Image (tube, one colour):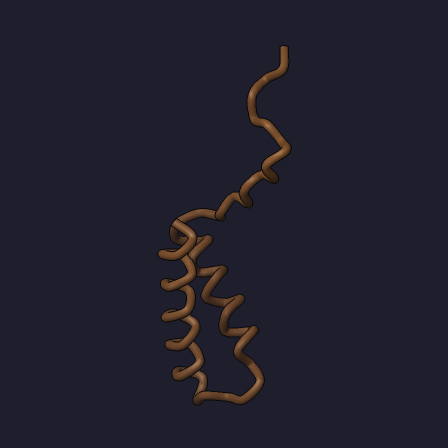
Length: 59
């Protein structure tokens, strides 16, 4: 899933960059805007848990 998300965001960030007139040094802003669009459309992505943390209930 991460790959699809990153590809979508990359393509969208490029579109936003082109629409803004291809400004230099604003790639991070375009990436954040595209990430926000992803989250609004598909929901936030949960970060994976480290290997040493279990989601099982110890009780």
